[in-house]
Image 1 (cartoon, rainbow, N blue to C red):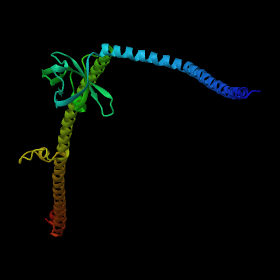
Image 2: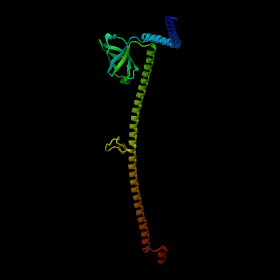
Image 3: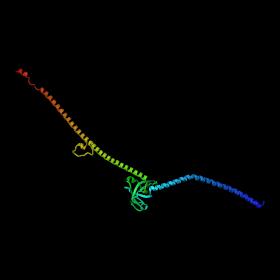
Image 4: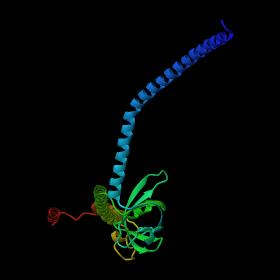
Length: 290
């Protein structure tokens, strides 16, 4: 064989070897990409329902945002609010005409707590409006207990509430007012009962003093004892006077009895002495003597 033929044959063999190696590598890569494509397709099939669910949630959130904006109206998310008059609930807010605040605009207040939650405080009307500040007063009867719970700080303000929300608040406010009126009636009744109890205690004290004496009785000299010292003391003094009279009567009885005894003894003695005197002659003896 010619030398050139040998070289060409060698090159063909080398090329065949390299071709086999590259073919094997190509098959390996193709299998790898095929496996990745199958895995990606399976993963896509797994994620497709989740993506569709997330898309539905996004649509629902967008609808909720739209509905909320339609129900809640304009809002001021973070507004510095100060309680300037705790007596009537007057507030000072850092929003004014430049922020859309105007006369007769009913603004609903939500106090923002430290943990981020909000508490509805009611509706307020502007009484003084500046460019960047406004003074608001409650559009409802705010009680001192309610105002004491308000804290100066960041509040959220809205110019509209959903009908159901406002209706629930009105019902709760009406219920609170009814309870306050009932409580007021009960307190007034209790106050009347306390006054009557005080009067009854005073009357009882007077009656006790009329029985056993006390500071409430007048101490006028010359008055009846029962009016100064009480009925018990008057009875005791009367009993003492009666006992003294009884003792005097007993002494008098003893004296009378003693005198009577002396008289009887004297009579007896007189009879004895009389019997000892000479007796006058009897009439029969006088006749015989004549």
